[in-house]
Length: 184
Image 1 (tube, rainbow, N blue to C red):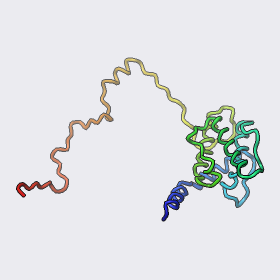
Image 2 (image 1 turned 135 degrees about the vertical axis):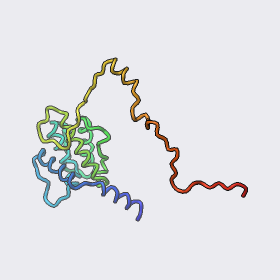
Image 3 (image 1 turned 90 degrees about the vertical axis):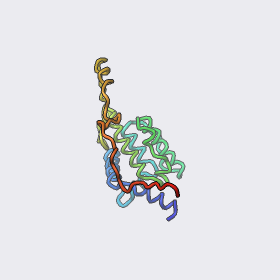
């Protein structure tokens, strides 16, 4: 098998149809339109129009102009505008897919991961009352220790420091012993 096929197979194996369906249902709910029957999820998203509508529903005016015609460069511009808008909304740069991942179908699982990242980010915005996608991000659990507690902690050797309570491996023989023959 060629390297290109191996890479394509590995990328395809990362894809989770259940997550794709969950993301599709979330998008349909927010945008208010069902995806056309029989059309693959990635084909509906490919021109970037649905993604731009999605972010505009989540945050009004995020993408002021959505291109509905004009060829591939206009559609790729839609995808780029969506990416800029979700970064401005708070989605981490590392969670955002590359334009070719969607437009050329290189890595649809990464597109789904980005949609889930957007869904998680909606939890952090109190103005968003719509449906959420994915688990709620954890809140900070700040701990306040007194100076006395911090000093007491310095005297304790944690188990991560490598203690084994005096046990050693001396006397253990695993397998045959090494034979050293002198004089040959």
